[in-house]
Structure formats: structure tokens, C-alpha cells
Image (cartoon, rainbow, N blue to C red):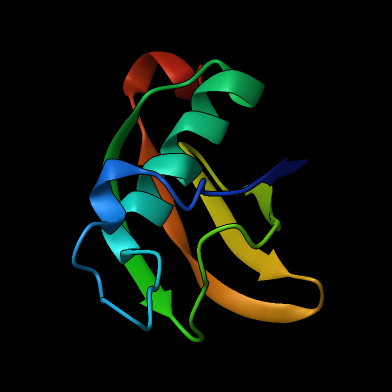
Amino acid sequence: MRVRDFVDPAHPALAGHFPGNPIVPGVLLLGRVLRAVGATLGAAVNAIPTARFHAVLRPGEAFDIELERGAGATVKFRVLRAETLIAAGALGLSAAAAA
């Protein structure tokens, strides 16, 4: 599954992160991944066993969140700007979502 998203440059989490050279905070990006899981899979995440950040995302840049169901109650995710990998990792889903 793939979800297109972007972070508005006026988002309050961007204030001071960093003046003159703004970047999207990793925690905000992970929040968007969790929201995508809820919207597309109807599942709640109960763990983030791995999350790695590979490149900078700037406010206002469009990005895609790719989700792939793994074994059991897991989901792999990738965040891409065009073909550039921004972040990747794995998520644990609640027991109800695994059924």
C-alpha cells in the first residue's frame, strides 16, 4: 500500500526546527506513518522495533509512505521522496490487528 503525504511548512512542530534550514522532525514523520497504518489497515501500532532515518525531508516536500504486511502482527514501512529513501523500519501491530 502507498499513501501520499506532505508536512505543511506552517506546522507548529517546525517552529525552531531549524531556523533558516528547516527539516521535518523524525517523530513527526513517524506520526504520519502511524496515521497511514490506521487509515489503510485499520490497525493500531503497539511497538516500533526498528526505525532508521536515511535522508532529510524538508517541509512542503511530497513524500510517499509504503506499507507492507509482514509475518504475524508486523508491518514494514518505507518513506520515500521520489526515489530517495527518507526512513524505513518495522512496526508491531496490536493483537486484534494481527487476527
